Amino acid sequence: MNIFLTGATGFVGAKLVQNLIQADMTLYLLFRDEHKKNKLLEKLKGFENKIHFVYGDITSDNCGITPDVLATLPQMDYFYHIAALVKFDEDLREQLFNINLEGTRHALSLARLLNTKHFLYVSTAYTVGVHEYAKEALHPLDTPVNNPYEESKLQAEHLVMETAQAFNMKASILRPAIIIGDSVTGEADSKFTLYGFMKALKVFKRKMLRSENDTVYRLFADDNCTSNLVPVDYVVRVLTHAVQHAEDQKIYHITNNHPPRNLEILSMIKHHLDFNQIDVAPIKDKTTMTDEEAVLNGYIDVFAPYFKKSIVFEENNTVHLLSNVNESTLQLSHDQLDHIIEVYFKN
Image (cartoon, rainbow, N blue to C red; front, side):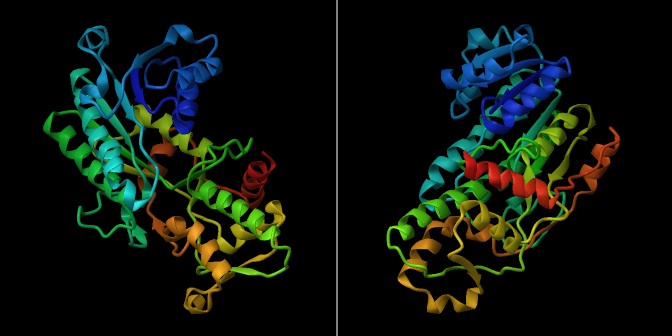
């Protein structure tokens, strides 16, 4: 079975490659960065005959693959499009759309040239935008969103389904929520979402320790809300089973149906950061914010939409997909989450 992947050298993609290679698949991996390619190769020793690296860039037509190289590639049974830019800043709007929307357009074009049977698009659970209930279905294009990242992924989802239908290619969308470290090892990509939030708190702690006071600083949020955290190993498990079990024109949430409360998460962070001078205060008290608290809340402002509400995600399609392999959806324990956070602060 031939499988093409974009984003294969990233955190999720590299773990997915390791899963797929164990299942005796032949993989074609798009790469742009030689260092990341070699780093992945180190993890795949013994399977070199099953891996073919293809140089390219999703921001170019046909992902930047030259006609000569294209002519050597076989028909693909599956095509995973994982590559994306995960940043939320408004001033990155053009870059986000170039990578997340136009990059998806180029991936679809390449998939068609390779006569791909099934296109698997890794999106985000947060194409639901500002709403608090998410169906396993396309959200309307005019859905109000929190940032250009969500908007770019929302438009890309519609593009995937429409293009696949138009060209008689199967397509499925897989929507992970907030991806965190491995539930066993704690290993993580420490640049995005929860990790960006924890890094901001580390920076703030260093800044405040220099002032040598014991003031308590407030984060303004609803402490009864939850954050939908999903370990990377669960995400990769669902992505792996999507081969052969994902159905055409269906959407699958890779989410947590028992998400931890923000207060619980913050308690773990405070413990492992060893910084008790942070507390959570209701948003209505923001008018009493001090200058130092304005700095703290400014650090995390870009993450605020993901910490101030509780979204319910349908997962019926995912339950059905996993039932085909006698597996169940995520059960993330308090101890597992605590371990993942602990590993971050130890590294």
